[in-house]
Length: 157
Image (cartoon, rainbow, N blue to C red):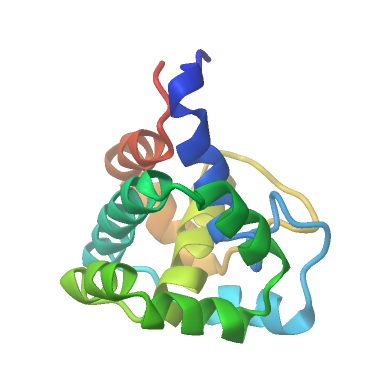
C-alpha cells in the first residue's frame, strides 16, 4: 500500500474524528460506546451519506489554518462536546444537513461503517465492534463500499 504524504492529514483527520468510538484506534471502548456501535443500523443510502459527509468534512477541516490544533482538541473532548462542536460550526452543520445526518449519526456511523467493513474483511479484536446485521451488510456491499471508504481516507493503491 502506498500513501502519498500530502494525503496523510485526511487519514489522520478521519481517525481523530471517530476517535471517541473507533476501536481500531482508541485504547478501549466504554460500554456506552460499544453499545452505540452495536445499535447503529447501517443501510446503503446511509453508508453513502456517511462516506460523502466524511469526504466533505475532511476537505473542510484540513482547509482551516488551525486544523491540527482542532484535531488535538477534538481527541480529548467528550462525545457530547464533539456533537456540539459539529452542530455549532456552520460549515460542518451544513455538511451534515446536506447528507441527511445528525452529528451523532456521523460520529457513531463513520466508525460503525469502518468497523463493519473491517470485520467483513476478517479483522477481529477486542476494540473492533460490529453487529451481526452490520457485518452482513458490509459483506454484501464490500465491493461497492470499500473503494469509496479508501478514497475518503485518501488511500491510493
